[in-house]
Amino acid sequence: MTSHPHSFGATTGASVQSASRRQWLRAPLGLALVAAGLGGLATSSALAQSTWPTKPVRIVVPFAAGGTTDLLGRAMAVELQKAFGQAFVVDNRAGAGGNVGADMVAKAPADGYTLLMGTVGTHGINRALYEKMPFDPIKDFAPISLVAAVPNVMVVNPDKARELKINTVQDFIKVAKASPGKLNMASSGNGTSIHLAGELFKSMTGTYLIHFPYRGSGPALMDLVGGNMDVMFDNLPSAMPQIKAGKLKALAVTSAQRSPALPDVPTLAEAGGPSLKGFDASSWFGLLAPAGTPPEVINRIQQEVAKSLASPAVKEKLLAQGAIPSGITPAEFAKLIDSEHKKWAQVVKTSGAKVD
Image (cartoon, rainbow, N blue to C red; front, side, top):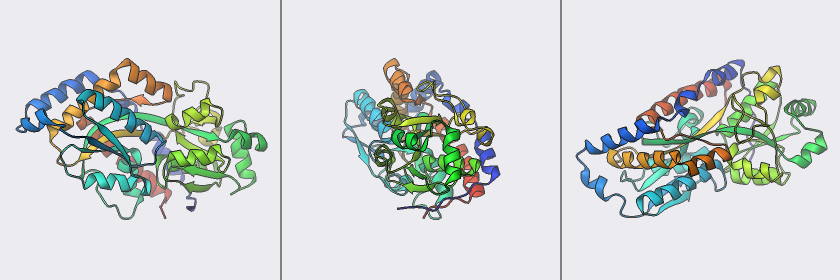
């Protein structure tokens, strides 16, 4: 399945460049825990607080196994299972840029037994990108907590890179401009942050890459490693194992600063020359529940998420994979979702990006 490339206007780069994620990446964990505790006490649903969970809890991951959403969803499932002594089961439901899985959770009973590992795509991009949405990302969900934010990384197949003499971002741009349409770009799906990061790259560099959307990062990475694709702007955690194994070559990260996980890999703004000055496009992932889920349950989950992300073992593991752990409160997460939707709506509008 192939989608037609889209052209971003000059204002799109400015929209992304002007966005700042620093405030919501700083997770005031102490305040989060206090707020969560107080929120649980001042309620009339003490029974739900004391008995939940009495059966397995499902975490719907709206993308295929192997991608960053899946990795973080499984990491949270392990930690929450330890905390509550009840099974937390990951259920991968890929399709429509995350809309299939997100819609399933939006229409699930609001009892705390079905959660979503949402993304910047499902809750920041899709409402502006899709003409018809099966759910409202603001009204149909109760935010729990941001789990982590990650930069994307521009990765290429090392064998094909050697064949085409691509060692740097500027080498890639040179090859792409010399043969428009020759290079293929994989993504985790139409309209995902991985897709739009690539489209932003295309618009700022004036290159023409053929976009191939997949049902998640996992299968897209497999084709990139296998030599069937040429480039991908993947989330760093899912690409990291292949980079470390030498199966993929990292040319640059998409964030404003270098990643501690790949300190020797430059940013696109550093490596891409004048055309990519100010490039900044990252992704985020967080837990949500259906709207109407008891606030006592929401607060209990957020409290345990914050505790786990603050623990040295989990924190160090995520940082090593390229993810920046968070743990912010439901209210703070709700503000983030609202601001991200507004920002990406402007990006989609000025770009003219559409999904087939």
